[in-house]
Every structure is written in structure tokens, then in C-alpha cells.
Length: 315
Image 1 (cartoon, rainbow, N blue to C red):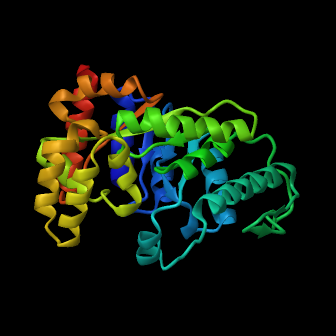
Image 2: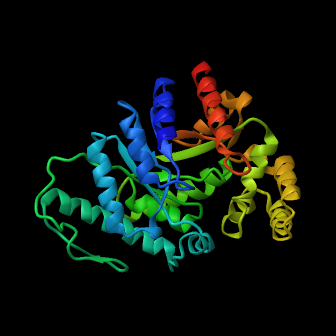
């Protein structure tokens, strides 16, 4: 959390408009509080919190408090996480993730409405919250909270189009996939709710070299995400990468990604940052910048983060 304070303040000084927190190793709501404490102007969001590891009432309460604490600068991002990872990481199983996440978002919003009014409840397909306001009283006025939903496959993306204020795309994405698969799915979901499609946030992983970026992308090359490669003309590469990973030949998988797929994914070598931002700005509405976490220790991540801020200031 102390690192989050320092890095968030440095990002604000460098001219960033927002700071995004991940749910990879540290508790994202606590880290968000630290980032809000150290800044005055930037929005602070979670891209994204694993929804099903927490009840919707717990998530609603944490986001509500952060929105109040930050004076309306907090953005809640929610994602389902891949089923096997959800189980191995949190010991939780969640069937029908798209329908469940839709209900989860509605439950969170119902809790927020109850907090504002001082009373309310929610009854949905998966979640029932009879008493979200346990201690009497209404929180009004209170800042509104933008809510983003993450997705990789079109069914979940359509849920984002239906119920979210923004869509958090994955860095394991190509321009072709975003334009031809995800944008239409967002539009379909939005049409179900008779609303405009939400804006798209896309994070770019910024590394010192192509090899480290390719290694990071191996962590996202899983069967549930292979459609990204299939729809982008990399079906054979997907077969080869997944086979190599299944045999624990990660170096070979990374080599295939680097040689055949990397230039189409959401990555940037730090020396080419301006060019990559221009490329992806033609497809996404908001660009986030992050650094690799796989195979890189904390000190190296922080050093790269600071070099990234300097590169951002130059461009």
C-alpha cells in the first residue's frame, strides 16, 4: 500500500488521468484506498476485481466507501476470472458466469441504491440480499460510481454492453478481435437494454523487450481465451502454443508468440510506446498502461513503472 501511494502520486504528477489497480496479488480495495489517499485529481479504478470471490454486498460496501473517501474518483471494475483459476485461487466455483455476473452487477447497484435511500433489497436469479442497510440511515448525497465489466468472450462482453458503464477489455486482444467480435457483442448487449454501447478501456502491457512481453502473454494463452487467436487468423499458432504449454514448454510457447502473434496483442516495448498508443487508440476509447508481472520481481516492476511514466511524459 505504501508503494501504491508513491506510484499513484507519481502517475498523477506525470499527467495520467487515471490510476488502475489490479487484483493479482494484493487486495485491490485496500490498494485503491492507498492510491486515493495519495492523489487529488486522478480517478482510481480496479481493472478488475474478481467478482465471485466476494459477495455482491461486500463489493458494494467497499466500492461505496471508496467513492465517498475519494470524493467521487473511484471506478469499480468487475470480472469473473476463468473458472479453474477461480477455484484454485479462491476455492470458489461459479456456474453460468455471464448470467451470474449480470445478476451480480444488478445486486451491487441495488445495494448502492439502498445505501442512498436508507432502505431496499435485491432478489435476483443468483443473489438475494434482504437487508443491505444493516445500520439505519441514508447516505445522500453520495458520489455516483462508474461500474466497468471485463470480458474476453462475446457472451460476457454482451453482458457488459447491457449493464456496465464501461467495458474493460483484456490485453490478450487484437484489433481485429476488438473490432469484429467485441464491439458487435457490446452493441448487442446495449440493444437489449435500449442504451448506447459503453466505452472500451484497453490496457497495454509495456515491457523493456519483446521477450518479456511474450512470456507475459503465455500466462493468458488458455483454452478459454484461444478464440482471440482463432478469430485473428492465428488458429495454428494457438494449437502450437497451447500444446507447448500443456507440455510445460513455456519458453517454446513464448517464442511462438513473439515471432508470430505479439505485434497484434495489447503490448508495447517501451521504446515504441507512442506508436503503440496511436495504433490502439484507433480501436479503444481509453488506453491503460501496465507492466509485466510474470517472471519479474517487485523491484524490477517498480523501476519499469517509473521508466514508463518518464516515457509517457516525453510523448
